Image (cartoon, rainbow, N blue to C red):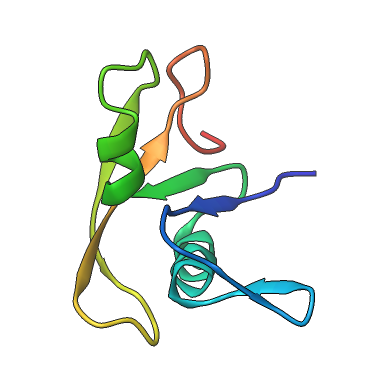
Amino acid sequence: MAIRAGLHAGEVELRDGDLGGIAVHIAARIMAEAAPGEVLVSRTVRDLVAGSDRALTDRGSHRLKGVDGDWELFAVADAGGRTGTG
């Protein structure tokens, strides 16, 4: 089973025992842009992991539904340097 994931960093709100807020919304929209087997992250996450050994591949600028502006997204490479399912 191939999964997809979207990561963003920001403040979240606890609402009746559930997490919410704009950061959660953005992460969900990033996940929606990911292909099966792919992990996409926002530029915010890319900036936070600068200097790590994790390779990120630029996936370009995207409009995220319900979020203002264009968002730069990056694919996370696996240990073999591959991104996504291909």
